[in-house]
Length: 491
Ligand SMILES: Nc1ncnc2c1ncn2[C@@H]1O[C@H](COP(=O)(O)OP(=O)(O)O)[C@@H](O)[C@H]1O
Ligand SMILES: [Mg+2]
Image (cartoon, rainbow, N blue to C red; front, side):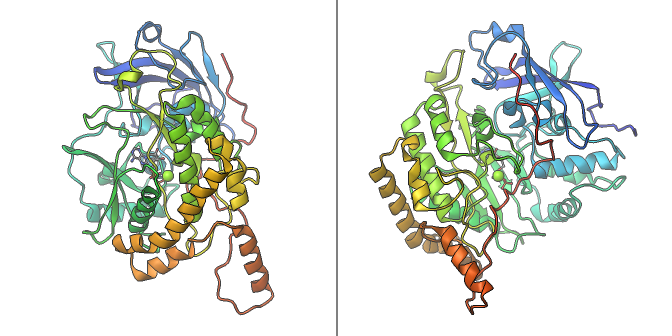
């Protein structure tokens, strides 16, 4: 195996010291040991986590995950997601960050498989949430926390970075020995997601910049995302603040970070993947379910009634917009440790809120009306239909008449207002046309699509788009893992 000079050495058992950012600094929470096993195609590493006794003694200690890793002595074992507990996996980059990390390793001629834990440890600390990681302790006995945190910076020269973005996107699996341009480090982020992005901390707040994908985008994704998020806000969903920057040759979207308070404190964050105890491989969508997520809000949220209705509205607006990229990493819960109601330690159940909606973009397939969402809506699974949306309304704390009223109001509002919002966001007339093809009433879209397909196959002269035959794949497929990885093992 070739050597490499990254800060992480490929150890058979990889130590990860886990820290949590508090207003007083980073506190050591515990240690995760990952027994590396990447011998098969998949990452079958097993992780063992223990809270530090010093942390358990703290009166303000809170768990990383109140269900799966409650505050207690002893070892917790994890047999999937490369041995990472899901609440820690939430801190790892997804496709974009991983692509750059692979480029870096390849530049050093590192040929061994990169384990899930390597992605975690090689990513900078600009990730969402309040966790930090270290590999070792320094001479002073303190963990050497991840180097590149959010630093006050001006927005980088996006145009100059564009060529590097294109290069990275062209070679997502990296080319051995190919030099790694130093400028790419400006693009290396611990944030999740597939789209190229950069985080910038300014005096007036922290923003995530979502860049264009020059190889794939046929439209201005930034303007369409801004319009979709504004549409969701207009139907009563709490969303993150967004604004398209149109001053460079390629638009980019400025997204205000919701996990950092105005005073600069970091909020704890877990994805819906963690809350649902779900897998993030698109081939295993067990537990990818809105009603189930709503029921989890009953025990996690400090305002379950509000959050459950919010989730219902989010589900309906995504269905209206054909946004089938609604996988559980595109939902999160946040917990503000500075909220007076959350002071003190112990289980944090009942202290979380549904995070503002993010990553909502009209019709990911562009030009078709999605027949399904990525997460199940009700008794009829992923199917977009009124019947399915209403079938589990009780899980969202809504009576049938109330749920129907909300659904009908959102439907009418989207049909009426979305064209105007697209105009306000200066979406081009061509992009507007294509975007509006994804917007359609909720009644039985799968039937409508099936009829269209039948008519098309019979040679009918109807100029319609080809419907998706199967559920559209989420945008962020994760590295392959075995299908039968064991469930997380309790201590
Ligand atoms: N406004 C935000 N504040 C904090 N974290 C965010 C925000 N928006 C998204 N995230 C986190 O960053 C990840 C990537 O962002 P996302 O908008 O989903 O990008 P992509 O389009 O590439 O999937 C999300 O999965 C979520 O964990
Ligand atoms: Mg996303």
